[in-house]
Each structure stands twice: as C-alpha cells, then as structure tokens.
Length: 522
Image 1 (cartoon, rainbow, N blue to C red):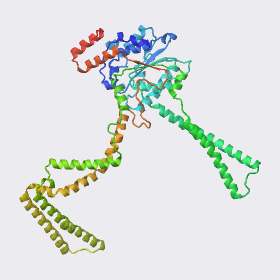
Image 2: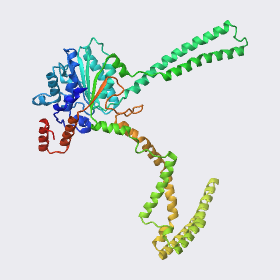
Image 3: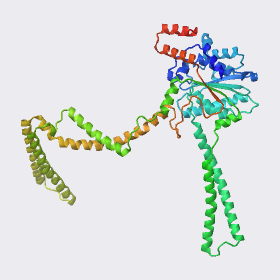
Image 4: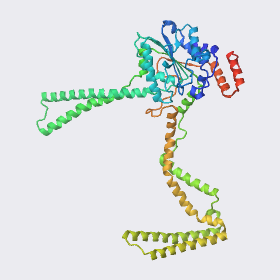
C-alpha cells in the first residue's frame, strides 16, 4: 500500500510521559506524530468514498496498564478546556474532518463515561474478558446503525483480534464494520487452541452418539442376517458366545472408523470464518524498534538459558561433588590443615593417633552403645554404679587421647591439631552433601521450569494450559490483515524524541521538539 509513504511529512512528535514499556515504547512516543498520520490515512482511504456514512464513530481500545483512573485524563480521553486542541482525540478528529470523513472519535458517546475501556491488566484472562465486552459493545452500536471503526494500541490490538468473531456477526443491513487499525501490537494468538479444544469437545459426544447408533443398527442387522440364514447357534453356551462376538464386532468397527475420522478432523479458525462472512479492513502498524515487541518476541523464541544440561541423577551427583569441593575450598580459606601440610614425622604420629582412635576408642564407644541397647531391649536396666564406671573409663580414655594430642600439638604446632580433625571433616562434607539432595532437587526443578513460568508472567499467560503462542507484528493466521511498518523517517524522529524525553534537560528538550515540529532534519 503506497499511502504509508505519505506519513513522513505529517510527523509531529509529542510525549504523553508514558513509561516506554507501558506505552508500547517507540510507538507510544510517536502516538501524536507519525502514527497519528498513519491512523488518519488508514481511516480515510478510498474505502471512505464507497458510501457516505451518516453515523460513523471511532472506538479507541487502550493497551496494558492504561485503564482509566479517577482524576487522571488518559490519551484516549477527550480533553476539555484550553488543552483540548492539542490532545490525541482532537488531532485525529481534525485530520478526519480535513479529509472529508464523517467519522469522529467517540461520536456515539453523549457522555465520557460511555466510552469503552477495560482493566488493562497484563493477563490473557483480562484480555479475553475485555474482548467479550468489546464484542457486545460494538454489536450494540452496529445494531443501532453505527459504522464502527476501531483503533487499538498495544495489547488492545489483541483484545480486538479476539473480539473479531463476535463483532463481525451483525447482519449486513445494520451498521457496517469499518476500518480496524492497530498500533504497536505484539500479536499473540491465545484463543485458537482454546477454540480448537472447545470444537473437539463439542464434536466428541456427537460423534460418539452416531457411533453408538451405527453400532446398534449393525448389531441388529447381523443378528437378523444370522436368523435368516439360520446361523444362530442352538446351544446356549455357543449362543452367548455368538451374541457377545457380534456385539463386540458391531461396536469395534464403527469406533475404529470414528477414531480415525476424529483424529484427522480440523476446525477452521474462527477468525478466518469471520473474514469469509465479512471481509476485514484490518491494518497493523508496527516497528521493529518497538521495545515491548522486541522483549516479548526474543524471550519467547530464546531457549531456556537456565536449563540444566544433565538429567536429574547426573545433576545430583555433580551437585554433591561440587558441594564437597566447595566445602574443601572454604576450609582452605580458613587455613584448615590436612595430612599434606605436615612433615613426615608429624604424618606418622598423626596416623598412629588416628589408628588408636579408630581401633580402640571408636570400637569401645560402639560396643558400649550396643550393649546398652541390648540391655534396654531385654528390659534389663543397668545399675547406676555400672553406668558410672563405664562412663568414667570412656571419658578418661578420651581425656588421655586429647592430652596426647595437645602434647603433640605443642611439639609440631597448630597444624598438627587442625590436621587431626581432617577425617571428621571428610565425613562432615559428605553428610552435608547428602543433606542438600532435596535442595538440589528443588533447584533442578526451578532451573528446568522457571523459564516457562517467567515467560508466562511476562506475556500475561499465567494459567494458560496450551503451548505459549508466538509473538508477531501482525496476526499471520488471520486473512485480510495488512501490515505496514512505520516510515523510516518517522521512526528515526521517534527515536530522537524518546532520547530527548529520557535524557535532555527541559530547555534543550523544548528546543529540540520545536526543531522537530518545524521538520528540520537533524
């Protein structure tokens, strides 16, 4: 379409002060500029001259986080007072009037509270609910004889897209559905899988009922033919077997045919059926520099950067090894010593101490514990004197060993004392690694599934049961939609305006805006 090339001379950029991500970034920054001209031209094509409409209105569908608030005037509201000539609505109405169009923004509204709005939540449920409300809203106007043109910004375009099957149902004798223009919409087809599931669920009981009918007819036909040709067994046992066999065959054959037909059946998209009933005048305007589209498009197509490269078992083994290695490194930071840090004589004495501990003290402790458990199991309670004697002997041995350790530490330094506990630390590292298995399992699940959860939250698809849809600049699955990229000159000046709004002081900002308004090329 050649009319998009006429946009550049009309570019006059203003800012509403919307945050970039909440206002479709680049496109929102140029809402009253290049895209104003795009909307003007899109709504005033030769399509206007086909028939002169007496009642024409432009419905504006806002995007995410742009719902009305008390005491706050939004960009899609009609302003009153001195600033009324500079708002979006007034500029678009003036442009439509200049081009001889009868359409006006919210022409059907006698009061401002009759304009359409939705919650603006970043949720597919909220957008679906808004689509149902928009469909009823437009149908009512068309039934009243209004020709409805729709201008949608950001996720408001998805609201309009989901509402198309409903808003195209009005009889042709009523008000026509005019031009639909979307600005910077990151299109995502969330409803096609849902409609396909609904259609399959509706076809299933109908198909099963036909299968049951054919099965009964086939069964009676087989029974009748068997009776005519005297093939029915006389023996009761054979008769039961014959009846069961014919009944099974009569139901299995139609069921098998039904499953084949049902698995191959496909439902035509509801949007394309709507297009066939009422051809669409749908124009999607966007830019590859638009921040929300870039964000959603690239994170949707990017692989999971956190996904583990191993299965769960290998991941747990690797995590335990990593935990042990990290514990050793932390111990080295605290200057903990081991056998490798001692000299030969110290190593030999340390080995003797560990052998004495393992072959004498540890078996004694284990034997005392086992004997005590056996006595308790048999109901024999040892006397207090016996317990005291055993404990005194064990404690005395431990104190003796510890005194010897301190004497050796006196001779070989604190490194000998630290190295004595190396076997105990070795066991503690393994026990700590085993204790972290449940934490590692939870980490593995988060790394494997966390990216999909993040995507669902970012795209507003929490609770969505189907595969996440692709992010497109125009709905490729809908017939009759034309896509136009923002003109290069308008895109360049929109980027400059956004840069000025973010970084320039107030004086320079006003001066640069004045230059842009005068169409001075920088």
